[in-house]
Image (cartoon, rainbow, N blue to C red; front, top):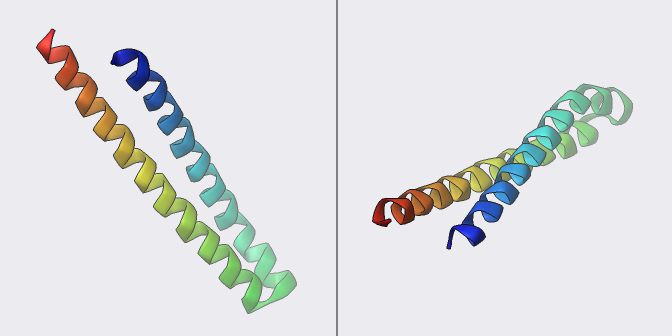
Length: 77
């Protein structure tokens, strides 16, 4: 069981970092997009920020669930 859960945990952690980085990049690009494209550019970047931060929370939650399952499996052994 741990042979499946550990790689799953690693993938979820990588997805968390990826979502975090994309959200931060979108945050940093918001000002430039606002200057170049106006309100529409800002709105698109804010929506991307929100999506990425929601994904980060989702992946972190799933990773926590996998860690809890790993601890439960380890406790039975």
